[in-house]
Image (cartoon, rainbow, N blue to C red; front, side, top):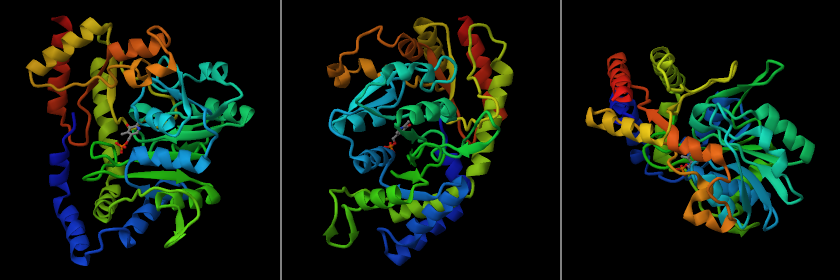
Length: 372
Ligand SMILES: *Cc1c(COP(=O)(O)O)cnc(C)c1O
């Protein structure tokens, strides 16, 4: 699905040098590397503050700690999603309110948000799944009408932009009040361990979140609020500084691979290629197809595996039907489209080192598997 080994070989000397410098300095926590990485990423994205932390899940938790919503407050979040956002909402004593997936784009369906808003609703949490933004124009309008906070999870879409109907393009993670991301190795900007960050253009919120990530202290041993310990490793920051220089090229490589798949799969019957929002960027964290039904999807996946083509189903089960969240009272049929997507999705290999030969083989084998 990804080829991190090949990617490392391409930039091995730069990465090794960066790591060696940290080892020589013996400053393993904090320091100039972390600060410089945060500044460089902020400049790259065009977002005022980047606050590094230990991982993408912590990033979401720090955001919710900073807002300190009353217990029992509701946050609207997609069920067709990775678990992190929902887990953190529950951990903080808040209530995840699941919204359906948008028919064509794998993000939350903004047409269904307002029906879910109650006096307890405090935030909308769009997750920009697979590399493309949710419909933030609608999200921002709804949020402003109901005075809700918008928290963007950009773990899968760093560097992508959303284009509004007036033509202005803005970076994902910098459109809502606050954004989060992950530097997990397989993410579009991945380190060699765990890492994450929070984005905001709001100075006061940035200060608050910085403090929470560092035990609630602004000065050493003076604790103003209850915090946690969530740091980006210095070695990871040094690695990320190298990799950030390649992010534009990495994104272009993913888009080129996606174009190849599009070209060769757009006319295949019963295969729906990933839709792209016109004008906005898709950075293709995943290239996800929708097949006819679960039987076909499972058969194709198994057939591909036999001929050495990996494929994955992100996500095999919607969060509202997971045991951990059964206390929320959702049942099978509560969110039919999310449930159907989980049965029909199939992601093909997508990374920065894919060759056209590999892709031609993948496409050929996929077509054969569909006919089998
Ligand atoms: C990877 C991911 C996260 C969590 O990131 P970690 O760094 O693994 O904690 C959160 N949300 C989404 C959508 C993700 O894909």
